[in-house]
Image (cartoon, rainbow, N blue to C red; front, side):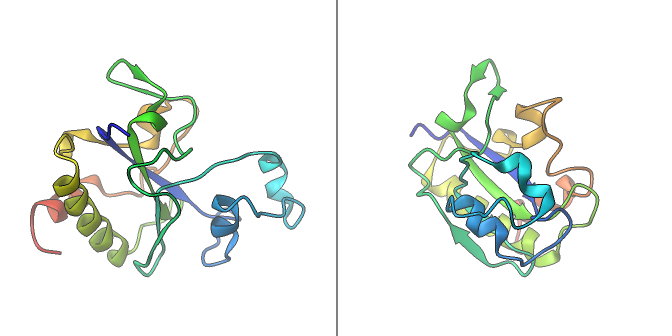
Length: 158
């Protein structure tokens, strides 16, 4: 994969609930969509992400960084379409309207710096939120994500 972009996402299943195991099951294509009323729209959906950072800063990798994951959907960035073909997707366990945890920012910064070393085309200007590559369709990581804080952590110690 020609890695040129990092897409930051926010996810919780059910919405606003954390550490349920449902996000893992979704990315492993094992989610029972009948287990919660809000999951009905996920029936038949096949999605994946490269990495999930949970509320305590733990990471779970689902797809190797040099392989394509299905996280961005119908998307475009700088006149390139289908961002899954060139973007690493990082999911943060959270919602658009609840602050993300300190440990998530620290872990995300460490991961980002490591990705910068692995993929020289990456830089802070090649990091976007899901809402930027899928405007009108997606809103994550949402206004609760503190971009300034994250970018400062990339630049210095966490």
